[in-house]
Length: 505
Image (cartoon, helix red, strand yellow):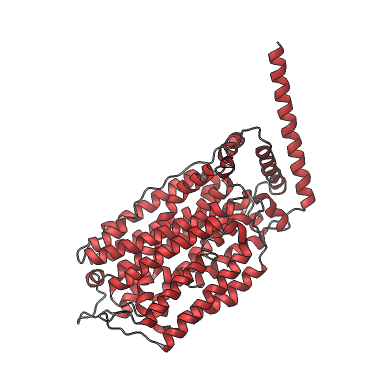
């Protein structure tokens, strides 16, 4: 029993090490909105009017720029990761993009005055974004290739847990700065400097060591039947791909048999995720909570920190206990309708009970109710549309085209991330309660319908995906697997025979 329970412990450890860099992803995306909301930052970079009140137009412009230039860099980093990963492998690609990220983090940290401070912050955010984009595309592919199908959804879902942890850390660091550092460049230097957290990276070794690595990760002997079958399954798929797609290029990768629909799904699933409202809430949580009545920087940052804790706990509970039992489609459908319903409730309350703008007034009951709705909302997000797009996209691509698939998915995520983060401050100001009604409509009308039509992938191996998407028939795949199993059995018998002959001599 204990052996079965801990059989995949090494795979979990591998995922934890690789995904430690993903904490940077979450932290970097969550930190900017809180930094720009700090009074001293607004004062130092000319975001206040002559009378000391906030210049809303200028603040929205700088806030959207500081947040969105990260996504712009990440879009190109995600696209660039595919050829780099194909050429130098997953490990060294992660190393290279982490170094790029660190250069950008240093630039944002050393910014100190209004003369060139914003320029340094913008430049640093673009460079950091390029690094984060590459990491976000390569890390899920690396981990999914090492995870057995029985726990692949759970292990790949660790990605979202690490993102949520990074976001939560950013909220509480901003809260701590608001409470204890009232002035000076440390208002932004400490939050931006914390980005320089080291990321551990492991290398998935060469093909000639595949059996040894697989046996190590599964905690099984190298000659165990399960290891032999999994190796045979992988080799059968690779041989099929090599025969059918030798010299794979971009055109073949995107338009080969059974491939195009996978790229469409990878693109659309992240388009919908970004327009579903979570990143608007996540990036601009302090501003969102101010809009529903949590006035004053410290109040809004504390409410944001609690939101971050709820998100981490809810994501962890889903990934570890529900992702492999509910399935991908059902989880996405429940998540869509839950989020949409709560957004409609928040919009209705905000319309009928508009909050006071006085920072000295405690949040009224209506504001507390809307905050509670946001906390429940993030639970629904965390059980579906938070972790599962990454899990699903990692599921559906075969090994040979996975770097193209993950790069496309990640680029889509960052493209729409950029668009949404750029327009959110203006939407909060201009739309008011209508922004929540818009998100509610997207969640139920688009995301729920999309989830209803995609195929289920729970419990299916990566090698099964070609069968699901029509690249090969189930009969052809079974024949290829059986052929490779016969080859492995023959090799094993020859080895045993040679050993026996040697012992006799």
